[in-house]
Amino acid sequence: MAATVPLDPPRVGTALARAVRLRCPRCGRGQLYDGWLSMRERCAVCGLLYEREQGYFVGAMYVNYALTAVLGLGGVLLLDALIGLSLTQQLLVAIPVMLLAPVLFFRHARSFWLGIEYFVSSLDQRSMRRGGRPSR
Image (cartoon, rainbow, N blue to C red):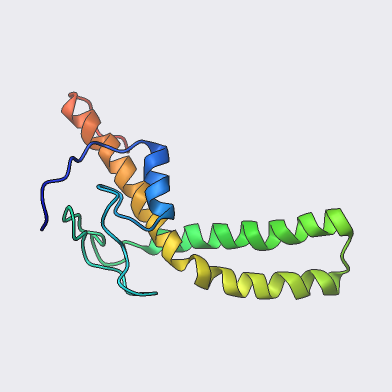
């Protein structure tokens, strides 16, 4: 591990910005991926373990699904409202978008899931330090 990194709890904007850049949600400097699909086990800078348990990233599938649905369906509905599309044209736009989007968003969906979980768990830790109970 490298030098000590200040680990202040991130704000929502900071956590989301780190997720967009595919960086460690804790320090913001470590990269999440070695290759296109190969996620690192932990941050090379601060040591944060990325996958906590088997099935940890199942929630990322929901994030990916939501992004795909918004882009695919929302895009088709917007185009239909702006220029008017036939059903055939809507399908010709929607099907390729909805087949490619999950592949293209895979890394970012995992990154967003990791960032959201880190942000929420840091809120729980701060609450416990002040003598409160963790939120459920």
